Every structure is written in structure tokens, then in C-alpha cells.
Image (cartoon, rainbow, N blue to C red):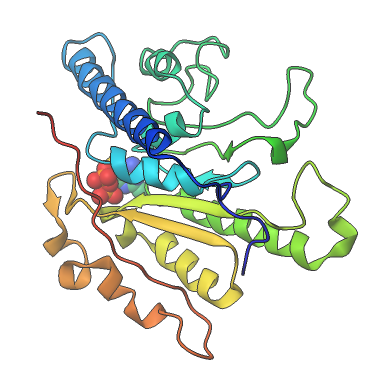
Length: 265
Ligand SMILES: Cc1ncc(C[n+]2csc(CCOP(=O)(O)OP(=O)(O)O)c2C)c(N)n1
């Protein structure tokens, strides 16, 4: 489904502006990496009870955030801290507040210390319990802990946009949908693609043809198990090959690219 607006304003950037953007992106990646390293130290040192971090996935997430617009939805997993920083819906301080289970919603807006760290969310209601204008903000559904649990909800978000798009009677609900012109962005680790909900969701997305963009962060491991023991042919894109959309068929488009890990100098 084609979107009716361009992803970023198509203005000609000067070299200086481009340089500034690259430096800002690099700063964000380094900040996020340092937060991960300090966070891990806090857990190993006993100051935080549990921690899970996004190191190694910074660059890919900054890239994903550049395609994400107000009104879009994320349904993702615990490695997405850099993405949440990049869309402006999480600060480093809030991220640490969640690591320490700070029970004040102003300190940890994702879950007021109720969820484990790395469980992100944006707030859809204001302080009076009224709906916010969800089209004026980037949106993230609230993460849950079971791996692949984000998948059925991702499909639901994308299907909702399709229903808004196809039903003009709903076009008046402008705080919930821009005539269905949103995209639902999903993220998952490669090992978690072995879960049933991943396959059910990808199959349904291929049949329903909904506005959904799924990223698999393929780092080769699921905790201590290599993908050779986890995924057929050790490649989720190969395993999904039959879902590939072809001329005149439904299905999904599969792209494979290098995420290029950011290494410490
Ligand atoms: C249903 C379920 N089973 C097991 C776990 C425990 N668990 C948490 S993360 C993880 C590994 C996930 O690996 P992968 O999907 O590759 O993501 P990565 O952390 O490597 O990015 C497991 C098994 C869980 N949270 N939920």
C-alpha cells in the first residue's frame, strides 16, 4: 500500500546539514551504547535486579527511526532503546529510572516501574484519562515479556489502519488514524522468530496485505543457542522465502541488509 506523504521532507540538504545529522546520529548511537554498558554494570554490581540492553543494534534502529512518523505504531521488544531515544519518546534518564524500577510515572513513563527494563510504551491517554491526539505523536504499544508476544498485536495495529483506510465512515476519527495512512513497525530477535506467533503473524500479513514493516535483528544468537540450531537453514529470510510476494500474488516483500554493529574504538 503506498503512503500518501513522503517519509522525510524532501529538501535539499547542504553538506554542513548532512554532516550535522551524521554527527547527531553518531552521538545518539554512542550515548545509547554507553547507557547499555553502564546499565549492565549496575545489574552485575547488584544495584538493579535485572537488565537487558540494546548494544549492537544502535545503527539499525537509528535507520528505522528515520522512516517512523507521527501516527505510526511500534510493537517491538526489549532491544529497542536506541529506537525509542531516536523517536524522542524516551530519555536516558527515563531509561535508567525503569532499570531501577522507579515507581513514579513521571520518572518512568513506560510503566511506572511495573515492567522489567527494556519494556517500552508511549502514553495514549492524558493525565485526565482522555485520549491524546495519537496522530500528533509517535506511538508505541506497551511491550510484554514473552518473546514474539508483540507479533499478534503488530498485526492488529496494521489491520486497524487498513480498516480505517477502507471505511470512509471512520475517517472522522482523526485522532486515531489519518485515513489509515499509518504503518505498524515490528521488531524481533532472530531466535524469537521460532515462536508460533511470528509465523502466524507473517502469514496473516501476507494474506491480509496490511501496512506492516517487520524488522528481524539477526545477531546469530538466542541467548547461548546459535541460529544454526534454531532456524531452518540458519536464515530467517530463507526460511520465509515462500512468503515472498511475486508478480500477481499476495505475500510479503523480504529485504536483507547488513546492520553494521557499532564498535568501541
Ligand atoms: C516465550 C518466552 N520464552 C523464553 C523467554 C526467555 N527469553 C528472553 S530473551 C530470549 C532470547 C531471545 O533471543 P532473540 O530473539 O534472538 O533476541 P536477542 O535478545 O538476541 O536480540 C529468551 C529465550 C521469553 N522471554 N519468552
